Image (cartoon, rainbow over all chains, first blue to last red; front, side, top):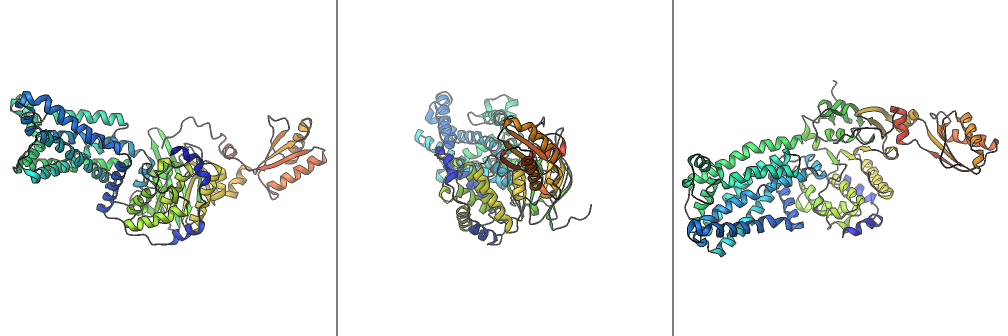
Amino acid sequence: MSTATTTETKDLAPVSAESLAALLVGGARPPRPSAVSASLTFGWRAVLKIKHVPEQLFDVTAFPIMMVLMYTYLFGGALAGSPTEYIQFLLPGILVMSVVMITMYTGVSVNTDIEKGVFDRFRSLPVWRPAPMVGYLLGDALRYTVASVVMLTVGLILGYRPDGGAGGVLAGIALLVLFAFAFSWIWTMFGLLLRTEKSVMGVSMMVIFPLTFLSNVFVDPRTMPGWLQAFVNNSPVTHLASAVRGLMDGDWPADEIAWSLGWAALFVLVFGPVTMRLYNRK
Amino acid sequence: MSRPTADLAIETAGLVKTFGATRAVDGVDLAVPAGTVYGVLGPNGAGKTTTVKMLATLLRPDGGQAHVFGRDVVHEADEVRGRVSLTGQYASVDEDLTGMENMILLGRLLGHSKKGARARGERLLEAFGLSDAAGRQVKHYSGGMRRRLDIAASILNTPDLLFLDEPTTGLDPRSRNQVWDIVRAVVAQGTTVLLTTQYLDEADQLASRIAVIDRGKVIAEGTKGELKASVGAGSVHLRLRDPAQRPLAADVLRRVLGASVQEEPDPVAVTARLGAAGAEGAAGQAARALSELAVAGVTVDNFALGQPSLDEVFLALTGHDTHDDSEEVAA
């Protein structure tokens, strides 16, 4: 395909001056798109990219499957007597952990994309300023949903039986995707702040590993030393894992849901404006 | 400063942008009349792109002021964005998407309905001869096609001011001519164009006024005629039949034109720089030189009148050529 491009120029039809002139005078400027419409358009761009490069779904399909299988069989026998027993406890948690981990790719894609010429055009458009960033995150929300569905399917095959039924599971996934959307503003910030893809990746690992592992995803925190419990019990990932676990078990853990939503709001309120400030200054 | 006037598309006063210790743009004053092509001419790293980025609201100036159609680029950035379009130095389209997807994406962002964006995209791609490539990813386009798409995207909504940042750098001569045709068509419809270029030839072809910029400063500004007059009228290139006659030819040229004469590596070639074109004009000077050479008995096989090159312009204006910038300003 690309080998044909060298001869392409010679075959290009000449520019049609008459039709060009007609296009330039014709038509008044339409009104500006709303913030929602502009964000959705950028989200559509993210979806198109997935369509053109489907390999990028690897991290939301293969990686989550690996996580479920690995931890179910690694810890299952030791912690709960059998993998089937353990997965009842683990699946909502590992779902939360994997999706929160996947969010860090947002930073990398922002970082590589922002250097491209097309961003200069986006930034010179008269649209709601955060729309390109929100668009990214909307595209990523789709990826998180794919990852959740994949993991849930694997879980069901391995014997996970949620007491909350379809409603509880959907509510859990919805909460998780919402939280991941809000949490991703940290990565848009780092994506704009740091100079190279590698440094974005490095910083992301430093944040994401302690945050996801030091939680109640794998085990009950009561066996941990006091100082660690203090951290784990207040970590947003613990609140989220408890909330998702509760929802999928058919409970309505109102306080854990409130904590998760509170953290989500905090992430957007703090890192959203910082991201936009960096974006405007870039 | 006085209230900026609205019949100027761009007005800047003492515009400054620094990157660390480098003053990429160091006090640029521009006044671009609406409805014209204005050329900003300069070598790599002169500050052209940085200037354009400030005017297109992508970079915040560190000093001075800039107005686009009377609107401040910092405090009224949103109003400015509503009237300008930018075609950056590197294609400002999404390489991963197809040509049509790019048009729809940008059409939607400019407020068109999905249907409207597609219809306008189709018509523009057709006018630009890109219909056949509409469904292909832009990364598989040739340089000329990419540029066309880029400009097509910039006129999805006819802008009042179009920034073209080195639109033909890296294009073959044929594609370059096609881009020039597009620029002429756009300006004919009343859009103001700010064109940056490294090629004197390009500025000459398109622009009615030109600012020459070097190391962040405007070193000359005026119409094409004024600018050329300030750097001399160009050069006469001669090829002689007999290499032995070259010293004689050089003497004649020096005497008649009063200009510096250079003997080329080719033993039959000689070049004379013409002085500032007076009433006689460059062709008149050359004609006089040719007849004097005939009188002196020198046989001339080939003769060409060349325009001053960017190198010559720079040499004349700054005393250094375009290549001795030790550091390039990345922007």
